[in-house]
Image 1: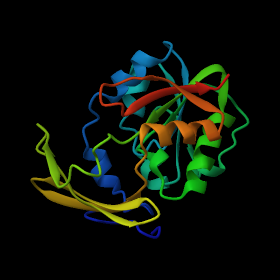
Image 2: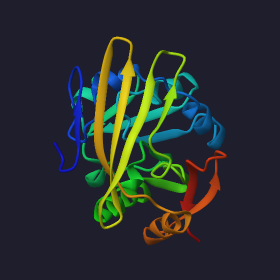
Image 3: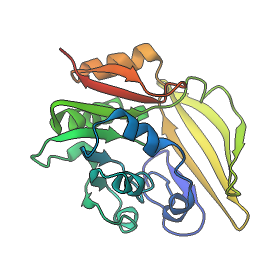
Image 4: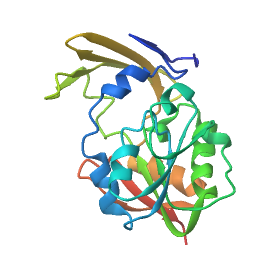
Length: 226
């Protein structure tokens, strides 16, 4: 388990505290539609941090070609129909370029600034000329609007119980995922980023934000800076 990360609940827990069984149950929501509306039809997508394929599978159904990357073999075992690569994202070098690179699961909020830079460099390293990077980031009030909870029609209740500062601009976040028959928890470290800090992080690696794809600004299309 990574320092500052842990998880509880049935099934395998990955080093960052994610539960494979939980992510297999989580509803996918609007994310595949957001991606599909932002990129060319039939694009070849490199999905970094694919997990169990919650977004991968709907993208395949929409006609995209997906190379799905995750460091957890247990997560990748749940992915069907996509080329899969089991590797740490920060070290990835496939020697290929892609129309679209996706950095999902709020990985841009890594507590380790060096790791964040490496993740963004991986995006740039695999980006084809004229391609775009889609980045999923946290909402502006995600660390201040706590505790909060959301109930899903599937029967799931998601609670963000706390976000406590642990130094150097990093918070320790505690989340609960409650189904009628099972409960999972996750504790993880996250570095909140203002719009200005986010733009600066992109600029460090030669990227620039092109458009916010959602009203809450949690999905961003970025490209290589001129």
